[in-house]
Length: 117
Figure 1 (cartoon, rainbow, N blue to C red):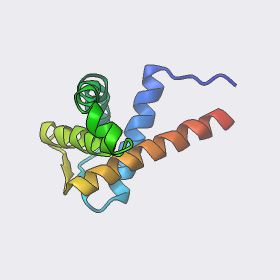
Figure 2: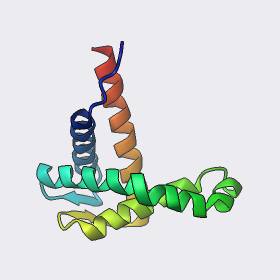
Figure 3: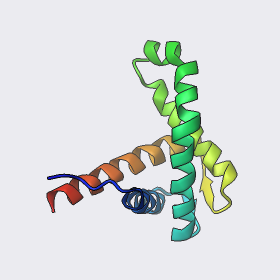
Figure 4: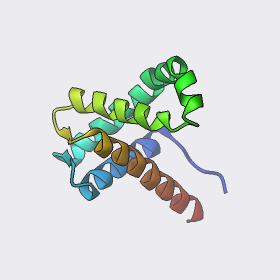
């Protein structure tokens, strides 16, 4: 079955994932669902612009760590979003890593669930 990945669908899935991950993690505070939509937009923009640059700059470290340094890059992206968005608060680097992991996992589950419907 063909998956519909329109921009609106991706925004809704990302927003729901951000909101749910923020609700599940005690070290993350998100003021409202509207804030979660803003977070999803900012994370999408940062992942499209800043993340590729950081990956290229840190290729040697990423290779030596067998890719685990990408977790730190994800935490940096979450930290930048935390600084830019007033309604988002992330307690620590470890919380940012877990937040990023949860967003990815929840999004993946939602897309998989959408394919099976």
